[in-house]
Length: 291
Image (cartoon, rainbow, N blue to C red; front, side, top):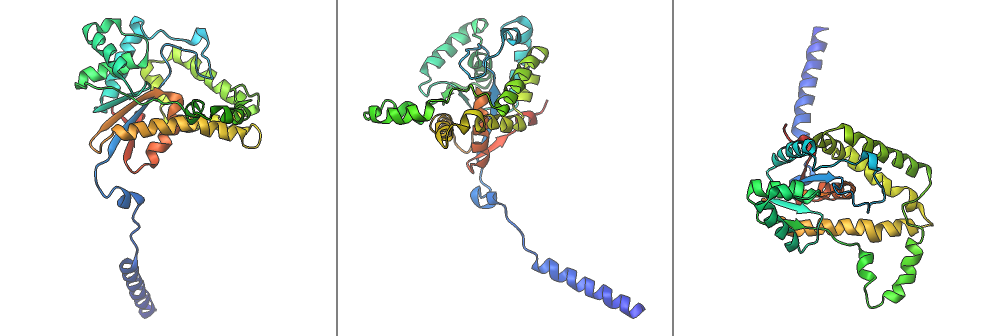
């Protein structure tokens, strides 16, 4: 009996030694794609539009709008900016045109009289961070979609009937079950804002789960128009627009950069996926910054 036990132990030792010698180390994709070299760090700060322009598909009811210029909200804004400042951005990208000279003129006026800043994300978040970190440039990365460009093409009269067919029913007014659920969800988020601080609300909006579920809103409703009309409309306008935004950010980024991206939260649903998949960037979590 003892001899059998000793033999079994010997076999197990030999097998374990063989397994260790013949085990295969699995290398992740980043081993080959990043090669241990630095890549640009990115922080997405998705925001609601402080000025409530009313241009988005979802409209906030008046009773749920907040005045970010009020004394109380300005205290919260300072807290929000201090939180984001922990990322220590070297470049700040905003929802503005690539020719950002007009924004920089506003920044010059802000430096002279910061008390007269406006109720928008650039004045309230980007400008204080630029001042804090001594940045002299603000990068606008917004773009129209492919349809905007093709509508101005010399053959636009030929293309227009195609676009009219694709976009005929693409109006964000779908009455399907999931669109109704998303509408309730967005109304709920609007109702939360008056009850939360700005930092708390930004943390809620910028959870990666919030981005992913927000992405789903584009895959129901108008997306199901016709056989491919809805999907083609999404690709030609909204997806194309965000791919171009990503490309604009890609152009101004270097491996040493820490890039803060301040855009409407709806853009983050696609941008998050693009930055996560790109070997040129590492995406930080908004909720992962230290308190």
